[in-house]
Image (cartoon, rainbow, N blue to C red):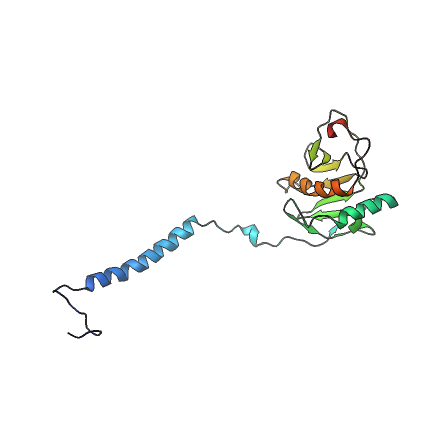
Length: 189
């Protein structure tokens, strides 16, 4: 018997059918595995590959007293780098823009420290989020704090699925940096 170059036959049976079966089964199993993986793997979303626009946002700068400007600077200096999963963006718009205004995501959600206060009735629906009392328009796109010595407004574009997530993240730093107002509506207690 020659080994190596010639197929060894033992007890009169050939191994050729087993070799052929293995040679066919392995590639078929690999192809089947690839097909199953592609069928159950999540498809890549097209917007995942698109880079968000994080260029500076042009904003309106509120007129602030010296005291309010110091409070707003303390707020913006410690603002989170992300709010509601939206990445912070630089702001521009004149002197004091970066000291009083924050922007997040694309399209931009804009938070303005030193906003005009809003007067609401005691029966108005208010929302207490992470220690801060908020009031919103009917659409839920424009929000303003009711219980802070220096009001903060947040304008949220319609594209943001959960504005409350943004407000929750901002509320933490607002509660920490801006004192509570003496005359908050009863719903804010």
